Length: 282
Image (cartoon, rainbow, N blue to C red; front, side, top):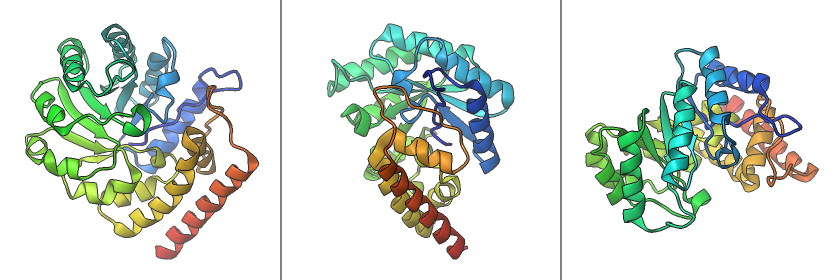
């Protein structure tokens, strides 16, 4: 699944037409589903009602598509409110980031948070650990503990440490689903029990992501090259790269900044080099 970008118009409002187009591009590329409102989708910056809007647009266009909706909240109340929006928009499941503003590294508090939310959530839940964004990596011991909850069905692990999958092998064998969110770890993750990939890079290099997640080391090497350039520039870099791949990203919400011409040229050069390598290798 691509961790889909969120398209905003020049006034920083969601561009419904552009979002529909972007979902269509992802589906045409072969995506089995989409993550909406994730880190790449500027989930922390979305406002009330926007998760429902994004999910509804997607569901109306593709009734059978798997829709995972990202949840970024610091309290039970706001988490439950965002989940309700996702459910109203007909998402299939929610991906809930580890809260961290006041409880970072207090594993027992975060574990208890997930249990309470799982008890009340109308949708199945995936845990989401993304230390590059939150400054906190949820321990594998806590993941394994929560996996026994009937409404907690998996995790997106974006830390890039594939040894965590080895540590969770027994849990994964019991049916708990792990998605890799780090583009540099895809090939190795598949062999260690990851079910699939949910990455920002799938916005602009879907075929490479698909191949790397299947264990193709050549595709993984090319993907590392392009992501090393794009990821220097965060969400704005991903959006620009996505525009080269035919998506309509629009602007990013402030305080995110647009790229300067030098950064755009750097990504363009890397993208064209990626295309030439893929063409040569095939």
